[in-house]
Length: 211
Ligand SMILES: NC(=O)c1ccc[n+]([C@@H]2O[C@H](COP(=O)([O-])OP(=O)(O)OC[C@H]3O[C@@H](n4cnc5c(N)ncnc54)[C@H](OP(=O)(O)O)[C@@H]3O)[C@@H](O)[C@H]2O)c1
Image 1 (spheres, rainbow, N blue to C red):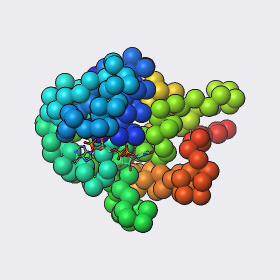
Image 2 (image 1 turned 180 degrees about the horizontal axis):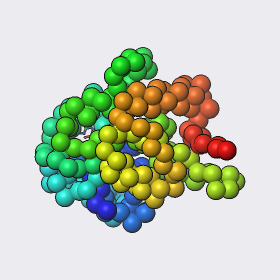
Image 3 (image 1 turned 120 degrees about the vertical axis):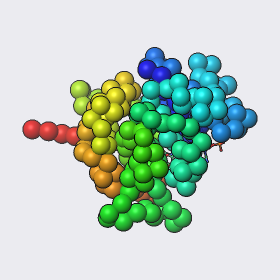
Image 4 (image 1 turned 135 degrees about the vertical axis):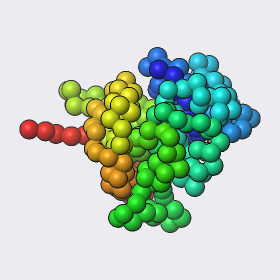
């Protein structure tokens, strides 16, 4: 599976390292090939590479969007033709003062879908910290795996993202159409508040117990 990642910060680099370890071809779609975060990521993992966004994205089956939310419009525009691509929206629309930018009737995932109407947008990899994308192992829980909530309007695209999440050690869970982003983004806020604001730390994820 060829994967492009827009953004080489905490999330982009964690995903790149984990997907390359899982045997996927990963290329960063980099707006600036000299960026410090990009150069650091490339120097630490020689199986990663970088290209300008249109070249990286046109060759990829799946594209991860891992930029600040404020940059999604520019990042999508610079990616070129996304027709038929699976676009995984990992962003969280968090504004100054740690507030969610959207209310009950909209979400970042829906906005990303509107910005990239020709792509199949799947919201995923947003509900907890990058540390868990770098390493999803939680030993001591038997077969129970961290859950990866995902949502979107295209079932084929969701199946692709579910399979990628499984490759990283998650249990994928299809939560519904793209409007479910409203709740996945709120779940991310809950994780951020617990992990980063109250100081519990990043070493926990969501999981699902079922009867
Ligand atoms: N941090 C987490 O634990 C976490 C977890 C889940 C979801 N998220 C969400 O994931 C997204 C990325 O978070 P992060 O912590 O990885 O951010 P980050 O470390 O600040 O990295 C942001 C990356 O986006 C790139 N970028 C910025 N503006 C861009 C633009 N206009 N076009 C293309 N690329 C651009 C930056 O490129 P340069 O290197 O060129 O500056 C950088 O590589 C955010 O929306 C965040 O809410 C974060």
